Length: 269
Image (cartoon, rainbow, N blue to C red; front, side, top):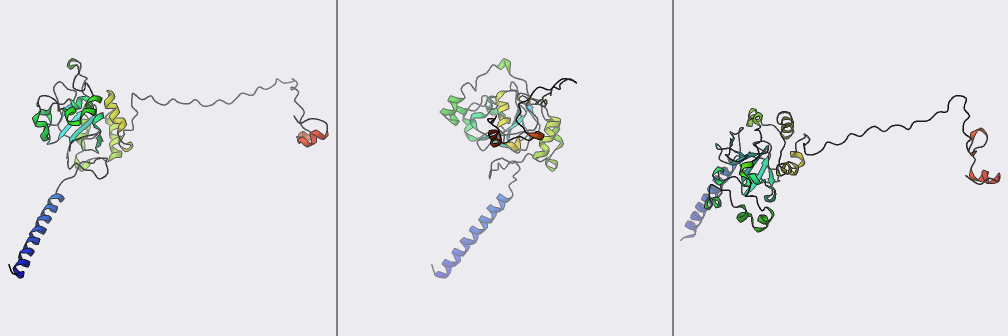
């Protein structure tokens, strides 16, 4: 091949590579990033534009969102989202989201059958859809030893479901509140607080900027300190002689220094 033709083919190849790179960059630019995660530099690429329709899972104190293409659940006053092989939780349907370590995900979230996951990861598909994912097999022996019994419970004594935060349907994407306003709205319209130890722990582990302001019922209110009383000064009745005091002063009540006491033959008091 002549040098001219070689340079021609090389130029065409570079042009094609640039076009492909530009198309890829444009495609990434169109990805909607709507879920805030309280981890620097991390985004899930999921947007929930409005308050979702939540349906109870029969036999579980958990709701799921059948009309969404994401694994979104509601349990004990919190939304739980399974995405990118991690669990996240939030008090609002579109975040901000906070990462939950596998050791602290509530039992009933782990017990959700696979068939209620709207977008299960591929490794879920080799397990029974009527049962929960095999988290011990997925997360390893150390996790399984720490969370023994997570898949066994009394099905006749399932706790009641938490009330849904239906007030959030008034806040779609265009009116979605910021973090400070979220706190105020929660305190005003959703007084429910988690009843299970794991649900309460999830709220306590949330970063400080994500905690609710309302005091938790399981945490005692700080005791009010009573104002200190001033000591009462007993006054002598009229006409009573004052108790003799040790004479340490000179004329006109001037206190003598130790040197002057020594000159008068008195040891300093």
